[in-house]
Length: 541
Ligand code: FAD
Ligand code: NAP
Image 1 (cartoon, rainbow, N blue to C red):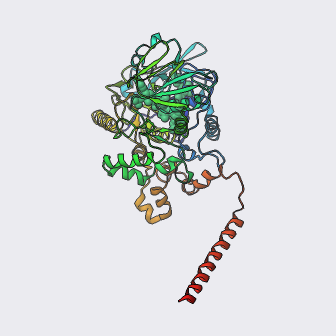
Image 2 (spheres, helix red, strand yellow):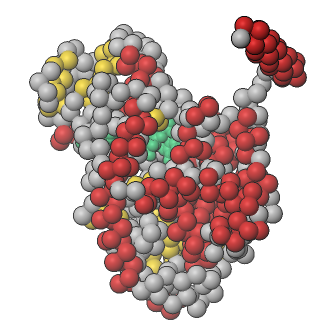
């Protein structure tokens, strides 16, 4: 596809969650004129907790804490404040978004309480590439023409409720609901709760409820690996896991070796087979659960793992292995999400044959002009925040004609090939439909805009930095070292990340000086003992 000839200036950004906010900033950075439409009264999307569930917006429980660390989740030219904890409560992450929006003066571009109801190509689309965006505010409809559109409306809004998978649920006399409805553990005291699914929602909710309920069961059809947020020496897991070195190993080692390594690593914490959690298909590289407490709750017996639900009766659950749990008072369907874009013309973003029809999860290939991009319709194995940032950086440069997309046929071929690879790596389950590897995908996007760090020349120019880039955590700052949007603070941010990790932990002053002099004295003493022993030994000879 040719670079855009039309001059794109105005961009409609749909949604003011993290994807919308970073899209706004990228538009401004590229000199575009964005207008963001947000259906609610505030920014933050999923991360703005509310006691009640709202139509059309993701809903989280009060206790959600990020499972990706602050250094791996911040935007590339805006590290999180030093004193922020490494894993953030949702309110703290929202605070970061607020500081970010203020710093880059983004609020002025947002029209709150404005719902986008339709996005249609203009009749002259094949020459202008323009869109007509219809919004609704206070019951009034408004229409405006935009040169480009960034769809940032999220994909954790529509609950996936596969009632057909649970025969008998219509007769069940207890309460059942989707995890989206869950807010607090209060009200579950003394209950026997069945949580279905084993994603991060299921495990978080089961752990929290197990402190109040009489008994919690988790039913899983495929099992899952479980990891803790804490890795070697207490560093956040993702800072150890997502390095260029480990990514290289992952790409060159045979799958059997990778599988073996993964198994060794996760089973070092606890034996997944003994705890009934081992995945059926260990060759799949599915997203592991990040949960620090699940194994211990299983050890205490307050949570029990069960196999797939075969049938439900009025008061009980019968599982595939023939076991029965009775009574069951509450069933929570933590069965994930599905997505749709009701405001978009039918043919664009759809899921067909277990495949999302978007080039690199962003661009509908069939458009004559590439003036529409989805931002955030992806589930990377790492943090989504740097991912949506690179998506937005690329999209805005495509809009401006600074980057071009290949032909429709090439894009379609890529979509099909990528999807086959995805199924091979992560499996066919509905929960994996947007799953991608992390660093590979980030590098792919960075390459498009010329911001992928070039390690060989860097090794000669700045070996200390090059070594950090290769063996250290692959964080977003790496993509601000060169190319468009270079940030002069990027090198320093990479070299000082340890400081920002330790700052919120070192809250007690330790008298390290006296400690080190004590250990020095001990060493001297030890040496003296050895020397004396040696002299005595000589005397005996
Ligand atoms: P959202 O946050 O859902 O924002 C979409 C916005 O669009 C909303 O404000 C909504 O009101 C608005 N909107 C929707 N439709 C319209 C419309 N028609 N008109 C106008 N406005 C509209 N990822 C990580 O990397 N790390 C984590 O720790 C992590 N934790 C998670 C925890 C939970 C419980 C869940 C469900 C997901 C988590 N994720 C995590 C993934 C998550 O998708 C991202 O963190 C991120 O919040 C997605 O942001 P978004 O802006 O794309 O979507
Ligand atoms: P999810 O990851 O999609 O998990 C859904 C679960 O439901 C899977 O275990 C799936 O099993 C199961 N399931 C789906 N259909 C089923 C059926 N018909 N019968 C039985 N089981 C079925 O959803 P989620 O846990 O809500 O998580 C959504 C996203 O939010 C993820 O990216 C997650 O990491 C994120 N999240 C993060 C946090 C956090 O940061 N603390 C908390 C919650 C969620 P199969 O795998 O077998 O299909």
